[in-house]
Length: 495
Ligand code: NDP
Image 1: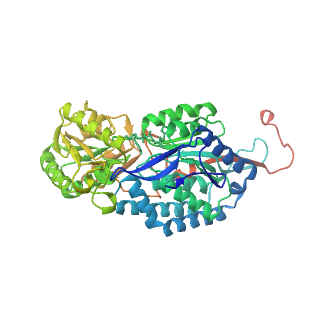
Image 2: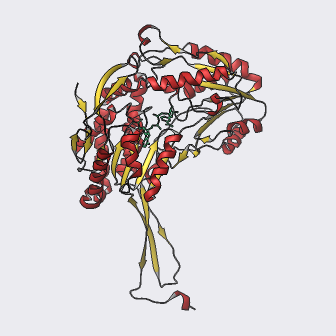
Image 3: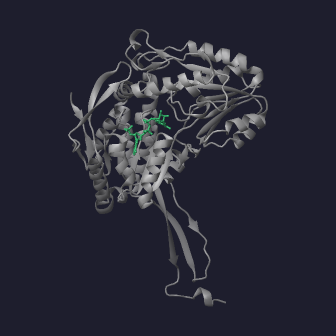
């Protein structure tokens, strides 16, 4: 089997470790590819290449914005041209249904196009400043941060890569990218595209390997100016601690335990459908998953019965069969999800449906879990407090708006939240009180390249996407100009 390698300084090369790692199809447990298994030395080489490209070559950061935009548009076109192949790759690698992988590819194309457009728009400002030093004029300009390290998880392999690579490159940075060791294949394809469109050597570097072996160096290196990470809160803390050494810029998009608040006056059928998308889409492996449903007590029984009916009707199959739900990403994640389910049972939550591994038909050797609903959950239960990252939802009830808000905020996380009600003023009141970075009214989980994405509290800091997503990868420089040659006055002696 051919081994997929690192891409450093414009060349494909194996890790200095000489080791390889198997990539597993979670739908059947079979090996689908081999990738090189990097260590810290590989990351050092990639950082050195990016450092050289940024500091000495400088061709990418000096390239005029519209030319960089052209390059990003060519990348978008090349992704679109390989859309079917990339969707299949992510489906086989991650386990998700093919149609969801196709949406990810479409979003990735749109993301590169969005940042290609954005980088050509006006940036910075012009300022009226005081004349204490004589007549002066000031403006600000946006510059790339420098060498940016990007680390992503396995739940949206191509899309998470794109959310970081597109704005980082648009801004003129040089990057080192480490995808999850579990789902590295579409990242390799993306770098084939970078190679084909002719990004200058060293501008974008790929390191394939585990977090502790290859990723940690990216966080700790003093030659890296910025690290952005999407993944678990615990790893985010490790990365932030390692990044302190040179005070590099840090962006963290971390976990969540997001509340989906449903009032009795909501359109019940619509709320059920959105709640399904909220927690079962992508097998529930979504950082923003609405994994805590807070429902007004008077409609709880009707809502839960309908949700269970819909969950039980979901088809489960290997991603290529395009059912409603595919496989959990890995054997380790399957064990983790099943462990959460067992603990919820032990701690007294009422299992409404699911609650077990799914092994029927051609799912026998894969890592599938039935969509699972737990009712009568209380705030002390792990299922209410901990991120599962699987198709498991906890139901709690409330009776007043104030109680709903208090329950929604009763979590160390603050990534997302939803509210369903036909009372517009209440929707706005509740959303204003929910301490989370992404909120939805009468819908759950739609995400847009144009709008900022990121968390409050222990869900991290910094933003992906939108204008904010570009700003993350930029420094702002102030330039002040003396409009009258010479020193006109000295401030302390003025007047
Ligand atoms: P991690 O947060 O550990 O992994 C995410 C990325 O970070 C991967 O590329 C990983 O590498 C890398 N990484 C791990 N350790 C380090 C380190 N010390 N330094 C630098 N990079 C590192 O998530 P897991 O894959 O282990 O999943 C565990 C849990 O995290 C899930 O069950 C879920 O609860 C949560 N999670 C949350 C996500 C989110 O979007 N909020 C996404 C994914 C997971 P590698 O995996 O290759 O070793």
